[in-house]
Image 1 (tube, rainbow, N blue to C red):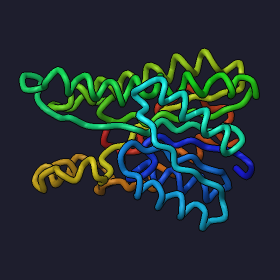
Image 2 (cartoon, rainbow, N blue to C red; image 1 turned 180 degrees about the vertical axis):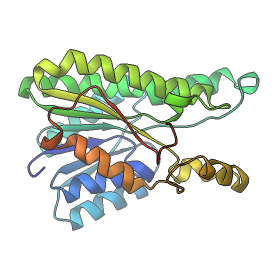
Image 3 (cartoon, rainbow, N blue to C red; image 1 turned 60 degrees about the horizontal axis):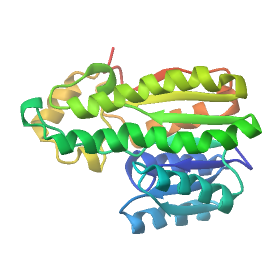
Amino acid sequence: MSGQVALVTGGSRGIGRAIALELARRGAAVAVNYVQHDQAAQAVVAEIEALGRRAIAIQADVGDFAQAARLVKETIRTLGGLDILVNNAGIVRDALLLRLREDDWDAVLRVNLKGVYNVTKAAVRPMMRQRHGRIINISSVSGLMGPAGQANYAASKAGVIGLTKSLARELGGRGITVNAVAPGFIPTELTAALEDDFRAQLKQQIPLGRFGTAEDVAHTVAFLASEEASYITGIVLPVDGGLSM
């Protein structure tokens, strides 16, 4: 990926951080997007620069189209282009439907689904001009399985899958691949509040018998962003230890 530029939304922590670092290890310059965690984002930039790659941290709320457009524009202006887009930014607001507040529904759909639309729409035009691009959307096995208590999150991630497939059809003729990765249970800040009993029950459902790591997801994203995956588009690749079988 030497000479290529990647943008990773939600890249300051967890899975996004691992993806940003993995793409940098493979030679890419990386724009690390964040909303609130400035110090964490700057730390990722420092790690990437220590690898001898260029990097920049850009604050932007992907749920707002104007900010998403600015994010893409600043990436191109500062790093000189955009070859790889990883739509990773996401939030959770879990609750059973009868307790799920309307604002929590709206917030999750705004970031997790509309955010993918916003950033991708801004990124597609320069990718079309260069007739090359890799777009990888981070969905979730929740979008495949629909767990109880995650109606908003599951709906947003299922929407990402539908969006991925439509865009793969629309953009394939311009040399742009669009794929989705669906992580299973990956311990991150988003899952830290889950109770130990629930974690133990969940682990029993995973055929490989372990939780995944952020690096497991990052390696998969890096493959889909590579030239080796140039004939793969429109797929949803679970990284879940077999949980969604």
